[in-house]
Length: 303
Picture 1 (tube, rainbow, N blue to C red):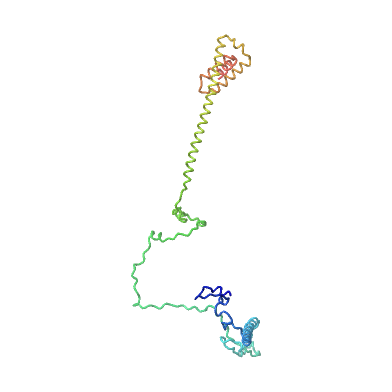
Picture 2 (spheres, rainbow, N blue to C red):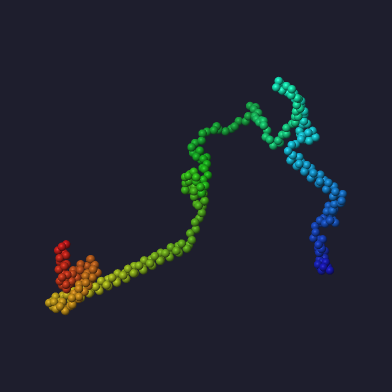
């Protein structure tokens, strides 16, 4: 059967194929006598001993729960002496006629955990003079201030709380977390970031400079254009003055005002440092508009 199949080719070797082979020895009822069921007599004896032990425990509990305990010769334990009875007869005139009383005296129980009430002082026995061993060392000297400072132990101060407001030196505070022993490693990307920021800053500066140059060129071109217009107007004014006012009569009234406004605008754009252009503009404006020249002269006189 199954055993033959498993044991095939296993010559000289022990092969376990049954459940009994897996069970430990002396663990079954058949192989171990201690595991046999008890007989009826053994069961009765065990029950009797158990009942007696339980009755004893219950009896002690009941005796301790009683309010009044009667102590007599039979209930006294071995540690307590037997009670003694003493006849007491009252003495004196006040106790005349009183009956004699019987006093029962019992030794008081002692607490085994109570500390001793008497204190014993043990004194060392005086040693003999001949048994003393000399101490081969120098006499004590008063320590110096430096030695006292070396032996002074500073108070323990928390890194989080300082209720006494102690002044802690910075080197001591840094030494608590061993920052001096730490090696700080700088990432290589910081250098790349710094270089990128430097390049971006230079590029932005160049762009700003280019925009400023372009703006200056535009302003210069506009200024040159205005100056060319002023030159043309001045030339027209000179031609009008040489022709004897022929051109002035041909221009309408609003033309003189527009030319004067253009001259004033051109004088404002010329700048405060361009004095010849300003003077020529005023000269042309006075030639084209005599009233403007008279007003200007009156204003200068008032000043």
